[in-house]
Length: 361
Picture 1: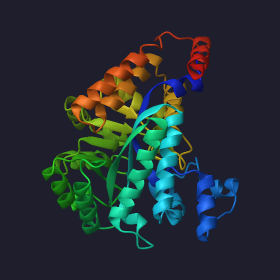
Picture 2 (picture 1 turned 135 degrees about the vertical axis):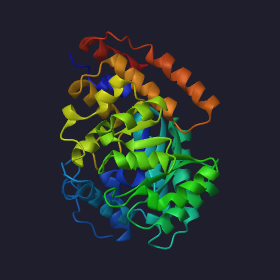
Picture 3 (picture 1 turned 90 degrees about the vertical axis):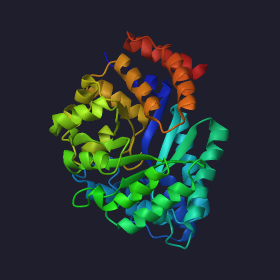
Picture 4 (picture 1 turned 90 degrees about the horizontal axis):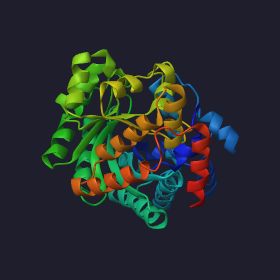
């Protein structure tokens, strides 16, 4: 019997792979556009969701990324960035996400002349305000973009170095993967590694396992974003497993982009059964029309994960977080204690009752 979504909303969670510019509230996009006189493809919630293909099967990463043409229009002012970051953390806190790493490319928010430092500080201001109001801890991952230029990625890497220990915990390479290899951006990764900054790279989503190998062996990735196609290279899979390189899995997003056919054929269960350090994340809360709780519930109902499995995955999320060891250890112990209050053999009725009890506590 399937456990209810409400139970998964009560479990303590992480979200290690979530894009700021893919996780806005539709209502906020409409309000900011009206205020700043920005043209949109539609002027109501339903119309805009349809125009952005929210939750739709786009069939490719390139098509999926077109939604960002809309979101980025309203993310060019200091107050908009602060508001959007705050609302993302607030929404995550409502489903009991305890720790979140928000990624974005600051260079994409300078169309109206904002300084890169202002972009970073505006987002951090929103995240810190949400932490104060809602108790959710968040940090930032700065992204370079594969399909723009290595020079711009290097500028983003320099920004990550400048904000190390000030809210930025890692550097990433995002954007269209096919025909834009990570090795072209190796100077950026060399810079951040020289400064002891964590590295995660989108790889194995829209290209094969060669992309994952390059991310690890050429660019020094400590985590892999998505990694759907890792299963095509058993030797590399075992290397990833042996070295505890965490995979930031985003199941629903992978179906939307055509990286996998459907949830039932997603490699997440295979990876988990083989012992890989898999984590479950949203990718884009708006564009994918999801939450961490929904993703976990789908792994339970569509992939056959038990509650015990899911608790293990949640602990993986904290283990894989880009946090100092002593902080991570403390948070991990607290999370494990909370998860222990949910027995592995809960029934559907038990799950519903526990969710009600926890929400009333």
